[in-house]
Structure formats: C-alpha cells, structure tokens
Amino acid sequence: MNEGEGNTGGMPGGRLTQQDRQRIATGLADGLSYAEIARRLGRPTSTISREIGRNGGPGGYRPQQAHQATVRRARRDAPAPSAVAGPPPGSMEEEIIEMAVRTGLPRMIARVHLDLLLSEDGRRTAAELTRRLKVSPASVSMSVNYLVQHGFVRRERDPRRRRDVYVVDNEAWYHSIVTSTRQTLEAARVSMAAAETVGLDGPVGQRLARGGAFLERVSLDMMESADRWRALLA
Image (cartoon, rainbow, N blue to C red; front, side, top):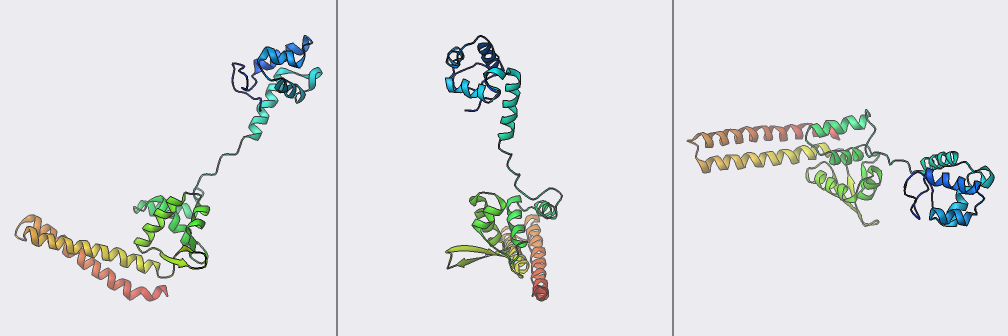
C-alpha cells in the first residue's frame, strides 16, 4: 500500500496523513510498540512498520520530512500523461489536416487519409492505421469506408494475411475527382427532372432547371479536364 497525501480521516486502509505521521512520531517518543501505534491509528502493524522503516527508523523518524518524502515518491511514480493523439501543432501534417477540415472533411478521416498519403508505399492495413494513429478500430473503419466510397483510396484483399489493405496510388486524385463529379452530375440530372415535374413555366421549375443545367455543364467539363490531364499522374 502506498502511504501518501490523501485521506484526512485516518481510516483503515486509507493513506497516511500528515496528522497520522505526527501521531506515529508521538507514539515512538512515548516508547510505544509498532503494534500499539497501529492499534491507536486503526492501521495494520505492517503499515506502521513500513512507514517508519522507510523514513529514518525509530530513532530518526521525522513526521514532516516523512510526509514530504512520500508526496515526492507519489509524484515520481505517477504515470506520465498519455500523448495527445494527432500530429504536433504547427507541423506540416497539422497544416494539411486543418486545410482538409476547412473544406468539410471530418478530422479523423483527414488523419487517416494523410497517413496513407505519407506512407512509403501508400499501403496500410486497418490494424496499422489503428496502431499508428492511436485511435479505435471503429474510427479507422468509418474513415476508410468513407475514403473508399469517395475514391480517395481503394481496398485490396491480401490473401496471405486474410485482411484488407487500403491503398493510395498515383491515380487516387483522378478517381476521387471522377467519383465526386459523377455524384454532382447525378444531382444535376435529378434537379432537371424535378424541374420537368414541377413545370418550366413557373419560378421553381425554372430555378431547378437552370441549376441543373449549370451543374451538368460544369460536371461534364470537369470529367473532360480530368481525362485530359490524367497522364500527369502516370
């Protein structure tokens, strides 16, 4: 049992207080046995024996010094606070993550994506991501599913290890743009279909039709541009 700064009630099994230590010193000065001191404090004899033995013995026990020494030992033996998850503030990694968050990407997903981007071969298993980022498997699972769905990474199966591997390759940016553009194109066509349903002769139908036409034209241009410049990724 550790006897440090804590309870002030002197309860059996609790930590010795400064007042307890003063009573121990008084008992020693009065020539009481360890057992009698323990009985008066309501403590096990072993607690009193250990307290006196580690703090100068019966002839050199000083309650104030004993208490201070115990407090120092408790501080020294206390576990260090766990490191805060995430890259150090002001680092390149932190700046990239903050930029991604400003664009609307959830922070956890941004961290997983960046770790994959910065890996030497662009490959990580879920277990590796969990260990490296010090996060839960559920957080990694949610993040990689989002990244796969939006084309940022692809999922491969490793038959030897019987687990999925998440990969960022040279064409990841192309696939992410194509995936996003297709989703926008689908929204454009839904908007134009809704305009037809509502009727093009009213303000609502016209607004939907114009918005849909704009999104469709931009999406098609984006697809064409991505195909034209795809060779840069090779």
